Picture 1 (cartoon, rainbow, N blue to C red):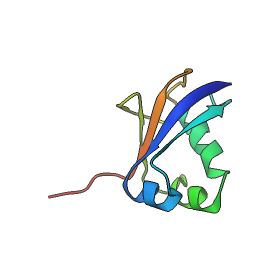
Picture 2: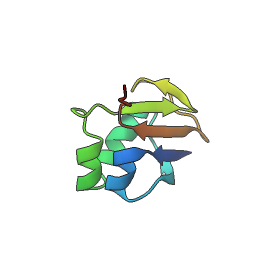
Picture 3: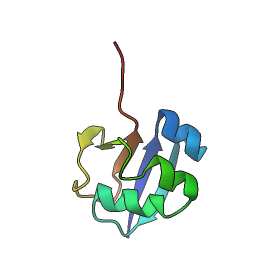
Length: 84
């Protein structure tokens, strides 16, 4: 088990009702952590679903689902940024 800090931004934060949390997890990758989070509630399943365009960052660097987690890491989930 490792402890990670998870940060949620924009519409994901609004849907989950929190901006951050600390979580003990057996997940070894960011993708596995995302799946674990989706299993916790209907709201999480909807906003973090694989079909949704969700960006992920590991220790403030954009990453893919296969990025390896270590104890003390910070993971962020946020919708893609749009603008003009």
